[in-house]
Length: 409
Image 1: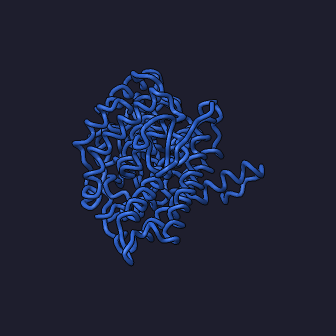
Image 2: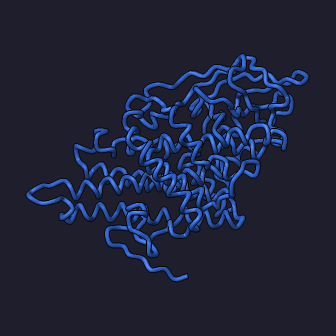
Image 3: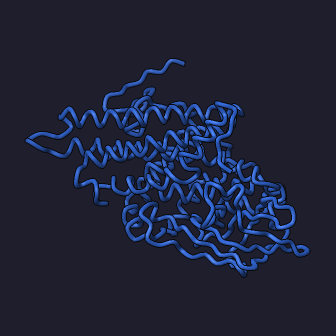
């Protein structure tokens, strides 16, 4: 279908008011959504603008999570859209992606909170839980009455966790005893349900367990002094004889391949988050360039400033086109590791460039929270690293295109 786009001012779209689109959506990709999906997205955008953006810098500076906002997120009714056990229309991959973008555009920390809960924790239960387990946990989680976390990474294991997982699970009758340590667990300090991945001492296979808040032998300690995603409550988790009933073992999690299925989906979401960060950085820089004056005129009138802005816009637009096509492929049932890995590696790399250019454009004002960009520059470093480093995702794609693995084991 032919679409008429107006790009004056950056972005446009199909007879709609220019202000409805994000400033950096230069090719109006958002218009690929149905009217019903755009209505959901615009409702989320309004909530983020009114409730999240005004407090984002303060929460980040204090490294405190705004628990009072959880009710507002719940009232949006989007936490369980992707899962059959939860009420509501099922979203396209495109809508899910745009929701991740929108949240990161407002605040990467809160986007991470939401992604851990709905993608990693709920996704693990949806993909690996029995029918009874899905019904037991997912409806409450979709209403955000119980918040989830995902505990895979360990103090000594990140990229090599598939073969190097040290946390153990030993069965005693109808109970499992978990022992080990986890690190960087988002939502870990306050989560009601933590999906813990551990190696079965009997068969050596990686299995998943849902540990409920208050379980003896489970201790979560907040990680302090972070320079990125400071609002996210990451935890060090200690498991010492943590007793988990067999009823809480995810029945269809039989090996690390099942864990990888979850990561494949959430890795795509991280690529969308990276685009959201790029669009926010571009928007901040563009606004600033029109307001800041040097030599008697707005710096937006200088050629080198326009060069920076166009480079930022080009990166963001190219990456948005990539993730939009990725979502379309996934809606068509094409869901390969290498597709999400390429998007995550490429988009997060371009994101680092874009936030750096935005900081450069703001000069000294770019290093203080008052002008917003400093938070995005810092948070970009965490997004660049989690859900698989650039190097690991590169090797996943390299294996796919050459047919030969280059991983060191």
